[in-house]
Length: 166
Image (tube, rainbow, N blue to C red; front, side, top):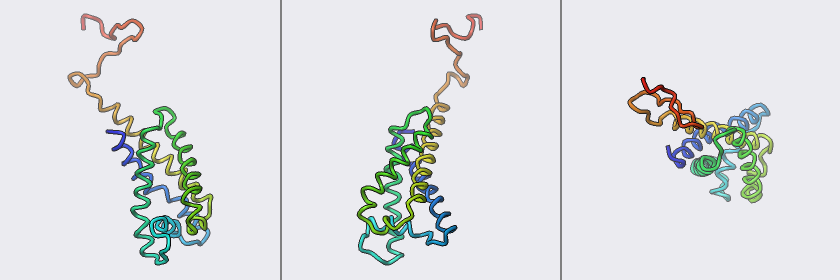
């Protein structure tokens, strides 16, 4: 799969699941579980107050951000410790999101901060896991000669793992 395709898939999966921490927090504290969704919609419609319109606007906003970050992560995450790096990336995305659009949008500023950070951390971990899975799938789909695994080679000597008589 291409970096773009991997990133789109990672972004969609992570975007769908990453709101769980803030939603659970909202429910546990008896806050509005859709407040974060409406806040995302306010990025597109900053002067809108109607809930239905803000919820509808949140769909392309969240999808675009999730896919965009997913593609970026697919392009830069290393193949080793991918999930750990994804967690760090999620925290960096949170810092960026809260400093740039978050400062300008009252609805985002009004959200409890730590549940939103947890959402971003969750996004980074899930997106990274999806990227790592795609890397594994890519390795497993490498064509093998005649359906058999290729013989092991000794990289130092260039000698194949099979004897000449096999």
